[in-house]
Image 1: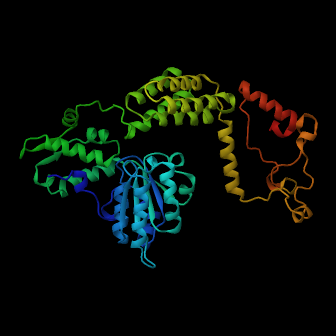
Image 2: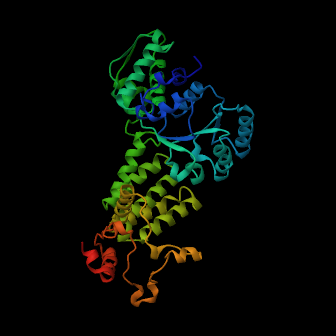
Image 3: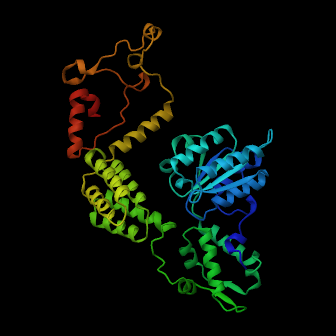
Length: 425
């Protein structure tokens, strides 16, 4: 039995695929594209063990096209170019492009990602990338813009139970054993929504029993075999997301002790320091914002310091930033403002730019009234003159609302001096 259980049970078709019904269930977007026989390049983003690699292989089998795999950990630019060259030779007129699957694409350097651009744009290969990290941080914008993004979710309890029962009934080795699943709480908890981890635990528990003897799976047996705390931090599992959530909420709630505690849990668990630093930068902008603009500067400085000095000293600037953010006054007015603006844009569409605000680099544009009537603010007392900057249809809309922290109060008073009643709403 050389092949692991997770590999033996890897689905070969969408009908055997468990979970991700929002993508591959009947009528779902990805299933429809697969059944049509043509798919765009796309990136699968989700936690480990939810079927990213399996889904890519199923697609390649269904489309009956060459399937190439690269690991971002072991492949360089030369490997990428070699695969693209092979794919060019494999292409046939009016046939789907060969698939290039890149696992952990977030680990590809900028130069490696740049080397993919031309092939993806021309359709030489159909790129399927898999990542556990937010692609907007880790994938270069030109490549991201050429790919669809699909988010995969941790498997739910019913999915995991279905997988357990399938393993016990269908695996050629397990079905020969007398195995009874009496309790499933511990094995589900340890797996953290990760199918691979679930099957690895099941295999470990069964293999630890004497050959030929019945196996009664209970919570106590699972915990005894794993010999670990079920609440231990797991940077690849569900606890990863729970602890970073507790960390951010502690900063938002102005509790520096709790912020330091949850940071320590992440550090002890082997979390990527860049991940912690990145979350601090986001928190500084989202939760502290205009109440203390220095918070974003300090969070960025902590990020730079960690990149330069690494572990273990990197914990110190991270801790400094976490405490500073937690003890700072809070405001999310900028965060709410941009979300309100995005909502307004989606609701009202492409409103025309008022003529005085338009650029007029040519005589024709000037003749059409572009830029005509624009008032240059610096020519007026206090560097301000009242004029309309919003589109005509939206001229009375308000998007930013001050939250009156000491720092933000100064900004609000400045707006009152400039705009008067408009900002009294």
